[in-house]
Length: 185
Image (cartoon, rainbow, N blue to C red; front, side, top):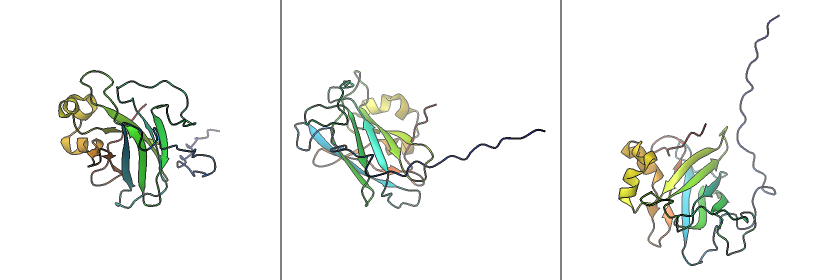
């Protein structure tokens, strides 16, 4: 007797339990007001253009000098140690915010970026993407990932510089101006 096995359907990411996942100052890679600190903010939108109020973002980045930090302490913020990692929940309005630094290039001429992982309802797996700084147009033009994309898609990965020096970058899961997501296999 031959039996054909059917794959088990995937499960969505979550639910997220408020008592287990967040930790104090999880979105503060540096304290607000710390010399060199900036605010990274944005909004997460679904395919219909509505905000998503219950997503979680994780970011990883080098420090302002482009060094990938290899220090412990990500879960216990001491106010001095920059670990290059943070996690932030999206608020009821769909807005996220981090206090961090402008990442430096990891090698001369490279475009500085922040790596992002997104967890949200309805996703069967987390999504990966990047946030690039807008200033160094030559480095952006030479970046292997950005140069492989059409100009309209490329702009979804480049943040906007705010008047106060911070960065604004929105995530769109589908539809018009859908954010470019990376596939790591």
